[in-house]
Image 1 (cartoon, helix red, strand yellow):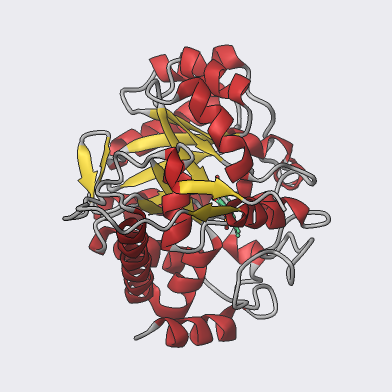
Image 2: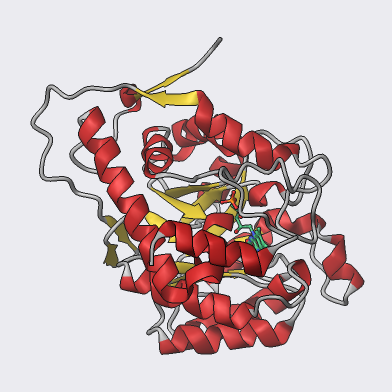
Length: 341
Ligand SMILES: Cc1cc2nc3c(=O)[nH]c(=O)nc-3n(C[C@H](O)[C@H](O)[C@H](O)COP(=O)(O)O)c2cc1C
């Protein structure tokens, strides 16, 4: 199974909601939420891709940087590479039941685990799907990060207990889902999270807590002061606010504020191993991929995810070779330069 076969099979399954474009940049699917697109004008999704591609790699090959270390140490375990699958929920609604959320999640968990990495799971309008995802995590010996919607302390804690029981590695709250009116309309209200509540949640679990959807240095500093273990610099793939900045544009400022204090991850528009290396040079320790992982899982199941992960890892090592980076733990910011023309 190669990437072309995987992508062709995915196109069959996901059309018309995802066209599996040669470059997944949010143009063809602009405004398609439900669906795979970015909300409104689709600009926030497109901006993620533009922001990353405005950064270029400085080619340097006079070095002795080998062997290459791509491992990521994460909350007591070591992943083979710093590339993870982002939380994806509500797939039945977004793809009109053309794919089964359970099947995709199983493929993501298995495929990432077989690649030496891990998947994050999501939380949508269907509570049964959240429970089903935890059953899958148990089967995968807890190798997953469980993401919970900002539903208020009692509902979040209920789900954290389930994640603890399933043996999850960590939990996350996608705080940026605060404005998801569709959830409120279906009896699952979400909203902004009071910082005091975050501190209370941190104190109420032994699991590391990550806030997903941080886009400003001040909120990153606030998150660090509340005791969270990490943040994901993310605008939810452009699905929650139109006219948002691209994640690669805000990452350096956030890294300047909190790097070394809490773990920093990034998602949005990461498509290749070179993109991964750019994100690390800009201050992230690891990245999450959403739509491209969904395409790999839909088109090839767990094996598709494995093949895609293998491709990304190869591209990452090639980019490290060509920029003189021996380890993903030390990626100097000097390997990237920003286009200003
Ligand atoms: C169909 C779909 C469903 C998603 N569901 C969730 C979710 O349940 N929780 C969450 O935190 N993020 C969710 N996201 C956002 C992703 O986790 C991630 O932030 C985003 O897709 C990254 O951008 P990329 O797709 O350009 O890689 C979803 C994204 C898509 C496309």
